[in-house]
Image (cartoon, rainbow, N blue to C red; front, side, top):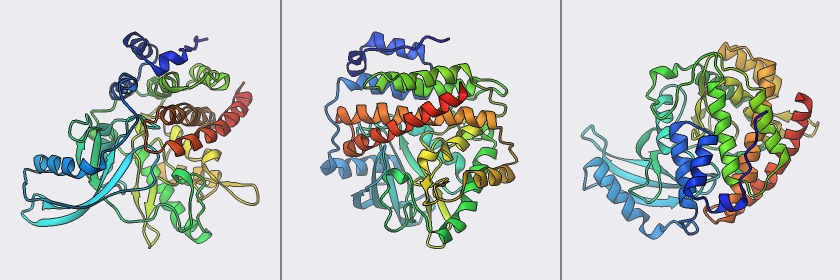
Amino acid sequence: MREYYTPTLKNRAQPNDDWIHSIRQKYPTERTLDEVLTKKLRNRTHTAEHKTDFSDLENQLVSFLKKATGQDDLVLKNLHRLSGGASKEQFTFDLTWNQGNSIRSSEKLILRMDPTESIVETHRLRESQMLNAMWGEVPVPKVHWTDPVGKELGHPFLIAGFLEGTVQPEGGDKASGLGMFFEPSLRLDLKEQFVQHLAKIHTIDWRKKDLTAYESPRENHVEGNEWSLGWWERVWQEDAVEAHPIVENAALWLRENMPTVEKPVIVHGDYRSGNFMYTEEHQINAVLDWELSHIGDFHEDLSYTTCQILGTPLEDGSVLTSGLLSKDEFLDKYQHYSGNTVDPKRLFYFDVFSYYKVAVISVATSSRAAYGRKTHLDAMMNLLSGFGYTGISALQRLLDQGS
């Protein structure tokens, strides 16, 4: 059995170079993920609480855009902060410029920018490359510019086209879209599209896409799952406010029972209600939040998407996947559209993995970011930490089944 590493609270709150090196060695991850996680730790003791200087953001943004386009006569208007979103600061603005066809035009754009510490530390180059890879395959915003270093605005960011649509139905007030309720007629219109888009994502030949910020796991090997689990093991060790035996036992179980990935696919990583948008005609016009995407096992997305804690409970006690359809119907439709055969044993493994990931994000990182005042959403982060303990209870039940 692998020995589980338990750093002290001081290590996590004030990580020094030796401790950071030891974490990187014990929990290897993909190169670009290691980059952002290491940066997070090195910044942890050197930054004050998070605060965006909104008064100067427009000037910084205009300066960047003039350099990026080579156009001094562009016009930026209507810069506004968006509400919602659990991990990134988001702003919209209107930009008038020449888009390369000698025709001056105006477009509404969205700026996604990292806070000092996020509920999930991710890489803007990875996100922008995946959005570009999905362009023309499934509905996504078009990326215009990316700064994965944060040189221009003080924090890493990407700028993409803004798509009009609805994320939460009228009257919805669910944090991050969790447990969202759709009226029956809306479910009927959306559920088929919801499954079709995920099936499409999993059948795209990712080797033909420009995904240099991603590692390429071997077929019929545990490599892809090792990287995926290693990511969240490392985050738990870096961010947990206190040790928790259930979470730590889950990591050991996942290591010991890890299956191979027969045929690696693009994994969205957060495919659920709240992360897609639809039009007045009930057409899904954007699949959002690709920051957790990676190359791995399609069962990982299936388990996460159908995870009960993320679903919508009905009065009869049943739970709808993303508020749209039952788990059985979702899996049947997925197999039909993707041609992939769902393996119940692998699905159970990733059921455990999904609750483990929920626990890491909600109990460890959200609490850590809120405690350090490194995020613009500290109240939501505290709320999500309670949600995470519900996930830990479900995690224990699954571990009992798998023992």
